[in-house]
Image 1 (cartoon, one colour):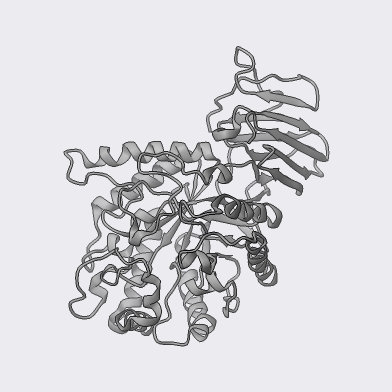
Image 2: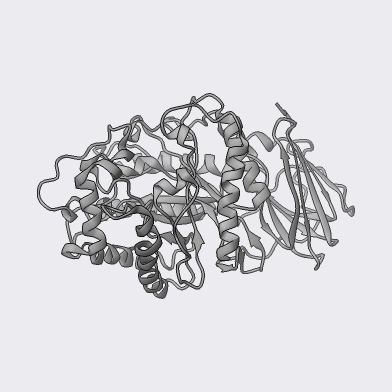
Length: 488
């Protein structure tokens, strides 16, 4: 990682240093040795994700993004017929990723569609793969960790869904559609959707074998890519005509137990993120029993039912905190980390900012991993769902003011405090490091927070690169106080 040192005012030789971007001329040097090389691998130990330096890592970021559900299957809308379509795609891609860096995002859950990969059975779309390669490369160049999520909703595009190629369906399934605001009801009411999932889980026509083969191809392609930290086998799996709870308890874990070890043999360093059915994310409960796997991340979702059916945010924000605590408690029971793979609110709903703030408050309290749904740049939204944190021209939606906040990303020791007062524009981040020498990574978003001040007690500044701040402990107890220059 290159060190673009900001202009800092440092009390050299003290355990307290103050940073103010642009406060002094020149290019001062951070006041203690820089961090070692960035870790290249993550591993799971119980409920924690650890890096090569044995630091407890938090995965926090966004889904990138919902526009990938329909052609040309990218989070960035671009002119596919332009003389240089790759350039038309790359320019907004790079600017969007730079914006996410400024927001303090470090993890991208990247939805990919089997229909995009293999539109014709046995034939992979090389142009689409080149665009996905470019996305992963650009993410890696900026220090993002990428989770490749095989995304589906109500199976396939002819049903107003996304994900599976039409050649996995019997007969003529009709043209693709994405104009159905109540698309999710098809899980319960559309016989064709239910039959498609029955075919999948029964492996009729070898559909499940073909799905496993698509995953083998993708893992082989990205196993050695330093940006790719893991894979999610299937987003919100459908249950067909089976009883939903019986499917979730019996069929789904058995599939994970069969598929994940085979994929892990192709990429032993990967993390695997296992989802449950989409209804569980609204009910905030699951019949799933822990899959018999040595280590994985459980990655459920949370969308309050009132939001799903078009209402404003619930007036009681504790509902979000209580709901996320249920998933955290399940992770503790299973002894696995929890990543909330999707959550969010449509833009313009009343109460959107406090609703999203309550989620991030819960993530800080519970030390929960999360990826916000979602970031896209598109004129047309999928099935009327306007949840993107970014506008078509790359500007932040108002709710980003709650998303961009300081937090502890990789802690050498144990977190003792992570309190953020978004109204006051202050944050207290503290940890205990028995070694009194480890380097902890703190995220201080350059968006909204970058012109504020930072005070370090019990440690010293090792480096600052954009939104990433590295603090080296010089005593067992370290505290970082952050103040935003223009607090609301």
